[in-house]
Image (cartoon, rainbow over the protein chains, first blue to last red):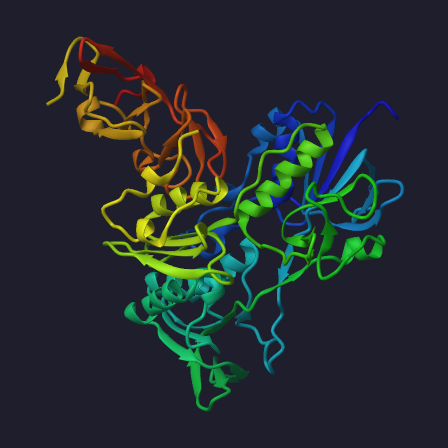
Length: 401
Length: 116
C-alpha cells in the first residue's frame, strides 16, 4: 500500500541503530525495519574490552530490550540477512524469502575481520574478534596462553583484557611501536610499553604459520623460533562488507561511496558507518572505523530522510581502554604540524599546526581531550606554550558557548 | 559539614562550586542509593545521581557545559535539569534531585525514589 511508509535499514550496529532511533526521535511516523544478521542489535566496543572477559550477556550490550523496541516501534529482524538489494525499487530480499519495500534503504553493513592468510589460519583455536559470538569463544582462553597477532586497537585491547583476566599473552606486531598513526609517536610508545609493564611478551615480528602440537598450537614466527599457545587471536584489520552494494550496482571503492549526507550513487539509498568511504574535494576519505563516526553518520542520514538540518560535525573522536587506563584521541595525531607534550601526572600529547590545534591524545585525563575537541572544532588560535603550560587550565582556552 | 533539616541537607554554600564544576555528596551523607553530583552551570545549581548508567563512573568528573554533563568515559550526555540522556552509549537517564539556594546555603532534597 502506497500510504504505508517504511525505512529499511540493513545492519543493526551503532550506525544502523542510530538511524532507526534518530528517525523516531525526529518524529518519523512510518514503519522502521532493521535487519541484523547477529542475534540482537547491540553495541560492539565492549567486545574487545570488558565483555571479552566478564561474560556479559548479549542482552547487556543490546541497544534496546523487547519492551523498548515496541515502544520505539522498531521492527528488528535479528538473525536475518539481506541477500539482495534492488536499488531501483528500494526493496530488499531476506534469507527467509521475505521481501521488504521501503521509501528509503540504509546500508549499515559494517565490516568483517580480515581473515588471516598464513598457513594454519583455518585451524580450530585461531580466531578473529568482531562479534559477540567471537568474544564468547575467546573466553575459553582466559587463564591460558594466547598469541595475539596485531597490536592495533582491537589487538591491544584484547591482549590487555586477557592479560588482566589471568592469561599469559604473547603480542606479535611487525612494528617496534604500533599505533603511531592513531596516537602519535609519543603516546604510541608510552601505550605500547604498557603491555610489557603488565607482563605481556611483546614481539616485533609476524606470524609465519600455525601448526598443531600435542593438543596445543605452535606459532612459527617470521624472524625464527616458535611459541606454543592454547589459542591465537588475529586482529589485523577489517574488510568492508560491500557485497550487497556492489551486487546492486552502487558505486563502491573499497567502501560504499557516500557524500556528507550519506547518499550513495543510487537515489534514496543511503549508507552509514564502517561500510562507507566519504567523498571529499581531494578524493575519498578512508573508512574511519570508529564508534562515534558511525553514530554521527547515522544522525546525518536520519536528518537527511527527515529533511531536517544535520548537526554540525567536528573532528573525529575515539576512546580505547587497556590495563584500566582510559585513552582518548581527537583529530589527527600524524600529518601536518608538530607534536608537543603537556607535562603532568597524566601527560597529554597535542598536534599543533600554525596556531591551530589539529589533534590530542590523553591517557587517564579525558577532560584534556574534551577541551581539545572544542579547541579544534571552534578553531581557537593558540600557541604551543599555552598547551604545554601545566599551570594554565586547558578549559580556560575554550571560549564559552 | 552537611547539616540536615526535615528532608533536606545543607551540602555547601554559594561559592563552593566554581562555574561548570561539581561537588559529590556521598550516598552515606545523602541517605540515597547513589552518590549525588551537585553542579553549578550558567548561574544555576543542579543535582543528579552521580553514576553514569552505562559504565560505573562519576559524572561529576565529566565535561559540564550548556546545561549538560558529558560522561568522562564515553561522552554519554545527560541534561542537568532532569537527568535525561541525550546521547549514547548510555541508554537510560539518571535521576534528578532538588537543590535550592536558601540564603547562602545549598540545600539538597534527595528524590524520594532514590532514598536508601
